[in-house]
Image (tube, rainbow, N blue to C red; front, side, top):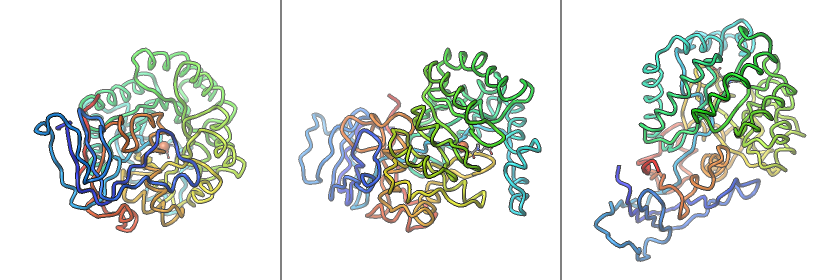
Amino acid sequence: MNSNYIIRNIGCLVTCSGFSAKHGKEMSDLGIIENGKVVITNGIISYVGHSSDTVPVECPEDYEIIDAQGNAVLPGFIDSHTHLVFGGYREEEFSWRMKGDTYLSILNRGGGIYSTVQATRNASFEDLELAAKNRLDKMLAMGVTTVEAKSGYGLDKETELKQLRVLKKLNRDHPIDLVSTYLGAHAVAKEYGDEKAYINFMLQEVMPAVREENLAACCDIFCEEGVFSVPESERFLLEAQAMGFQLKIHADEIVSTGGAELAAGVGALSADHLLHASHRGVEALAKSHTVATLLPCTAFSLKENYARGREMIDAGCAVALATDLNPGSSFTASIPLTIALACIYMQLSPEEAVTALTINAAAAIGKADSIGSIDTGKKGDLIILEYPSYRFLPYHVGMNCVQKTIKSYKL
Ligand code: NIG
Ligand code: FE
């Protein structure tokens, strides 16, 4: 890929300008420039302005000129919550759920996450890598330029490290940038004893190795009834923070447990899911720097009620959107579907949905200073739509509106 571009004749340049998460009403401001131009030099945005401006580049012959033909240009999308690397599939469970079986009952019978754990332990490094690479290729075509991806389908040390090493290799080899999260606390690995004993095992045996090999920037936990309790989640997260991990939480996904309050209290980067977040939890998030990451494809696939996105934004939260790509609760990496569900069922405006997939998603992975908006100094990751306005994104339901993804080199 080239790393010097002049993109001109941009009908609607959606900059999403900013270097931190946007809360509440700020989410509606997309920083639009009509008739815009963007210059990318050595993979970094070096100029943002109007099409008629003369651009100060020293050697124009070193630049590829792209005519956006009056279409809209946006920052590349950031999928800030995925379980990208896994073995096997669970299509049978999907049929059971459609007939009334529940996610937690399947998990408690040893299926669900445990079934993927078995398949991931059995899978080779190469098979995991190839399957994940194929998923990333499709995501890139939908305009995704950065992906957060979690471990959590090994639970034992060896397989968790295998998943994270696959991610490290993919980050090197694939154009998409990856941010890795250690999610050993995805389910209790019964071979290590109870919840407490398994948490101790992770803290003492696995996480020092993850740090030493620099395999994950963040740590996540499935704080849920019958999985990890709030007090044990808090103990785990505070220890992880002390080890240098940034924090994320699967919070209030299936039952209201107080996960949102916990996320705000420990200063997590994000609290994710929040389908059953309490009113107090939403208020706590609104006052904090923790991003409320909503995953409408999961609610859709589990036939659950959607998170109260409208209420969260009105309360002043910074909301992000992500796919939750995984083989169980949300087997999709579809950005178009995510946007459509967010606008149609969670009452986000198209502007808010765009903010939620760009600058706020960047903040949810601790990267709002370098990606998520079209500002000078940020990475040259952007997308050209095949339509003149970002408003086509929810309107063209479930369809990919991205004509071209421009992904800068790894820096
Ligand atoms: O975000 N809830 C926990 N983790 C995933 C599902 C993982 C799975 O079912 O394999 C989620 O929904
Ligand atoms: Fe998840």
